[in-house]
Length: 185
Image (cartoon, rainbow, N blue to C red; front, top):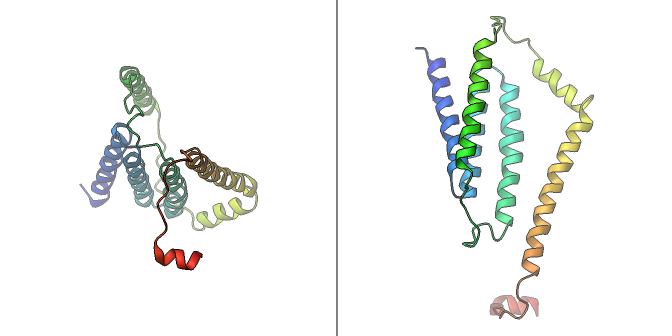
């Protein structure tokens, strides 16, 4: 077994293990961290496939943007770790049956599909062409996605702010330290 195959199997194991931890972890923050690990593994597979642009896009867009947005949303939600929120799922059997059915369909489809394998190297400049398309022909969808992500982040901040405003106004407040009181007053 050569090193490329060994690296692929190691990355595949990492991705599958992280994906299992994403759906089985009871802590949502840990699930987000495992998702980041799985997405890094996918970027590693892209590197093995000699697609460095896709690997960089995977890291920048999914790991860097989407995952961080999810972590910010989790951190800004004040009651996410509250003991009154149930962290169980009663639909485990249904989810398991649907997952096994989907796995069967995917395996059958992969088994029946004749894949054309090319030994030709990837054409030079393919990443540059894709980048040029993203900034010219597909600039509008690219910007719409960025505005949607920004809106989601602003929405998370607004929701977190409303939760802090709804707290008991008669609750005792802690006095400012004397050093801050001198600056403020």
